[in-house]
Image (cartoon, rainbow, N blue to C red; front, side, top):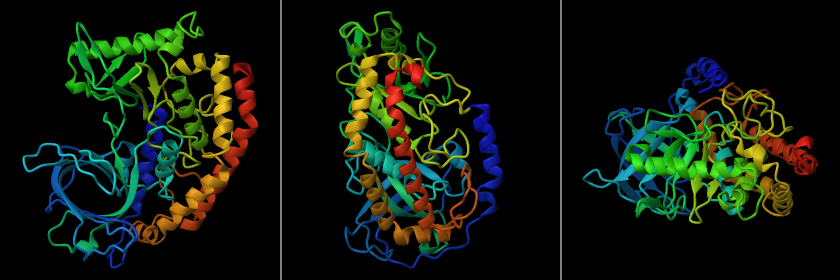
Length: 449
């Protein structure tokens, strides 16, 4: 983690929700959202190890949901607190896995999402619109780039055996697919032994790294974390093969003939995925883009692709550092200090390619006529806000933070939820206009950025 990031997190810890402890809240309403109840039988939930619990879901479709309704599904789970800087908030986010009676992973379909065993309950807090990740993931899927699918719900955490359930309301959450390999998740082939080598795919990330074995360093000095297969499940031979395969991708970009259509980087790199990753992160002006929570995968065609996108809660003006609060400038080429990390050389190399820049310009124009049309984006925001209307009121009664600083909110702080939505819409409208005005100089060449 960079010194700058640590500085902001420490300041945030001083001024965030610790001074805004939530008042007791009694839930006595109907909800338009599904209700999720996690019952730990009084056991606390820690960062790790996971805590055994039972998760009940009340989801009556288009009918109102009430705490008195019978559950529409019940699952055994093992749950833990997740996140990095977000762990300082009183409103936590959680990761959980569904299990059978023996404690083994069990695939379940939740809220209409494809069956899997690993899930996230993300609790938006510093994002007072409650919807930034939801909007970004949905838009990515709309343009044909898988991002985790998500469903809103209202969460109850039954961690006390004496407190009535209606007093254990936690707020508005997103049930989110965890990033992992799978036909209905990141669709990469399983890594298999093939003769003296291996074949298949993998998922890696640029992010904070844990301990030895959780990451590798490429021949070009890029540090990447193992996501799938997990680092603790890799033998030395598989680990070496992934390192060599990824280094081959980087070598193709560094080579003198990197522009050759047959022998250059196009053989090892899905350039279109890099273009979509760039445009999505630049549209939302994601402060962590390119440095943190940045995922790559080796697909079925054997090429390295960017994505899926992840963790855009500190975007669209919702950060007081890294220049995110204003709508100008490209994050990729920004001079604003963000991380004490070097940007991988891939991006500068890609932008040296006239064909890459031309395809980026064409993709922007195509998307602006459809999924990136400002009318479509604003309509999506309005529809989401309408869906959250009564639930957001309960969330902010439980967590009275509107009009207050929560790390790393920039000024001015919206005094109510409608103003949060207006600020988001104004920011995106201005951002798209700036990108329209500056896409041509970008694709004209590096000297024009």
